[in-house]
Image (cartoon, one colour):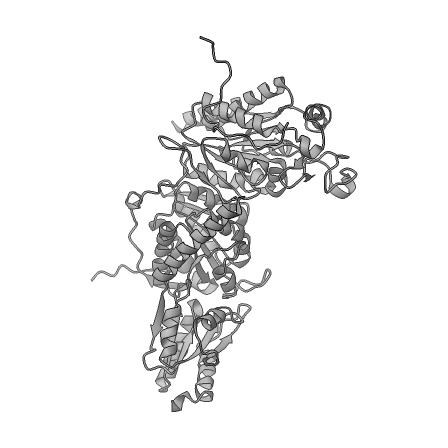
Length: 261
Length: 360
């Protein structure tokens, strides 16, 4: 009998993705579903998708999902996690959602060290509304509200929210990855898994920012979009671990346990 | 009989009663004149099993944290005062759409804008007309005494759970600050509450659940709206409540709620001493508005004087409830001015003689 090497993850519904050809969301959904299955947390995980292309994540991920208003995912996730501390809570947010309208909620959830995991999909535009400028849109990048390209004098420069979050005391693990190549997809899965593991160990706020192609709004072919991620986006948003205090938190944890004991 | 009464501040009564009514999640943000409620919650939740207190980064975050807690089936509350409640409107619309139970306290202050911190009733429209976007209603309860803050806080949590809808307790700076003797309710057992079969707690031994309000298909969105309407019709039949005071023989009935009703009562007592037949109708539910109670008074031939600490907002509900417009009069003071009983007395007496009610 042939060995099964590729199958639908247990927590991905039998549904056809509505996402545009070449969009990164379908890949990231799959990675999240695979990680949930591998960590065996499908029966205690609760996801929070806010407004944006990814709000429809609940049509695909077969786990409990509670929709948030635009920008409010970190606050809703805080409410869920504090009420049910033994459940695993994650948000799945776009760049406009997390780095513009939801900046305050995100920074303060990270600063409080909320023990939740954030999947932050950065495609440099507002996708669902038709390709307007996002806080992450690159300088010179065309969008429907930056015709002729984003200018710092008028529009401000791209905002690196992940870097900002590293200085919050409560954030434990923040990594930036991409889904534009097989190698990067594999790294993204590792990062997502690590982020969930941080939560499972009660070590604090974890986040993975994923650079994700949006060929439709970038007006590129899918393959060109993947190349653009590599050649342009990573210059401003370098792929790397931005913060990893997992070991330090473990040590803090065990020494405070000793003190209390 | 043992006297179980204690002397407590209004804001503390609401907070303590909420915990006794099973509230285990509170998120708030500082704003005067209701900080005492938030501060009380900060100390009591830490001592309460499974209790959570969060000082949020904004009113918006606070109400959205409450949404998250409500999704898990936890009895949850947030509180604020007028400008802060404006910020919560987004969340209240989502609570209504996602059919989530939660309690929101508005300790009203003078407005619009930043206004002031004096007691006011200027948020009646915002509270009763939905406030946020979309075709929805919010149950609005208006206490006037400390004891009612106990009763209505308990009811707020019961109604929220029963009807899966946000409930607003509408108080004002006076009610929040004043101290009166009160008999607190007995703490409920969380295990006695009916199980909720819709919560998000991880899909163990059941299909996964979604709580959402994005309904891209207008046919489905329309059905949600009609479903909410059917629920609101049930609520409108079941819960309207008002206190009537000396209305039997009254020729003039004052209509007021909350602090304004207490002031009106003072004026009525004085009028009665002088033989003037004046009474009071005091709505306890502002939505649903107790139309039938008012309608019965109209049919009994009474004249009405609506008194509010605003320029006339509940007035419109009275006008909608009654047929004879020329029998409805209004007196109000906005901006955080609290009228004295004498002021209302003079206004009521002038109306009484002007309309020749003494000869009726």
